[in-house]
Length: 327
Image 1 (cartoon, helix red, strand yellow):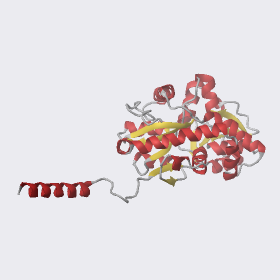
Image 2 (cartoon, helix red, strand yellow; image 1 turned 45 degrees about the horizontal axis):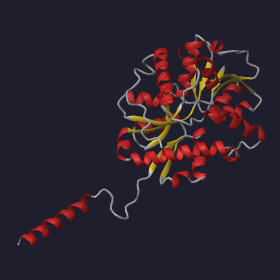
Image 3 (cartoon, one colour; image 1 turned 45 degrees about the vertical axis):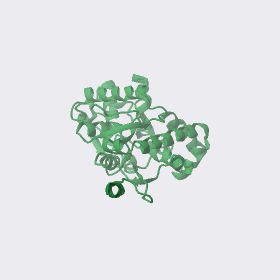
Image 4 (cartoon, rainbow, N blue to C red; image 1 turned 120 degrees about the horizontal axis):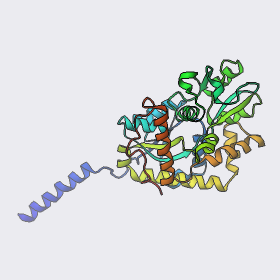
């Protein structure tokens, strides 16, 4: 009698285990949903994909490519993607609002220019008082916030109050510059490089160069971000992604031909264009997501909060950054 009862209990336990097992044989592995916008982020993904680094580290993925920074920021904050390349200050603001955004790495410091027509009399940001100033990412984008902070801290100009801010895609901003409907425009990474070679514009300000000249190492503006829930559920998937990212950066450093390959993708193929890609974007790639880099990011948030006030960032949120997923 007793052996029969034991056998029955063991059978029931085995059925419960099969019923509630999180992954049965033949189940589809979890794909990492990645959100990104066109631009320098595409360069990292281009190398990752062409060199199969994601596959090498067992990262199955699907891309959600959108056209504007605000959309990818919304996707990350609302957990419509598992991982995305979002503006750093936007991720900080989302966490401060209880969205659970989590920064596990960073890609780039800015390679963004404020351009003016070649014959513009403007010599510095001071000359943009009372002018229409274009921005490509919206007032809340990290590049826009960095521009506003630089202008107010070192030039004494509150662009948000003393200029008229116009948001539009970079090609539209170039058209407005051509028609003299803008005094200046902050444009996207790749467009900064393309337009600087067009012969019609002059660089009034380089965001990273200005920050480095005034305050030392520039903060990263493009973060590698996820959310607390996903990080708790799939830590190994995030670690594998970061392994692929680190290997991608190493490959870029050792193989300059990647710039030509990427140049073909974005229709920048002349020697001058390829050299500019490498010279401007290469040094801005973040190689180490360590305590020093995180301190630089935190200092940037503090400066932003102090200079631009609570409408931009009320507080520097706790737990925003972690290096727990470093390889």
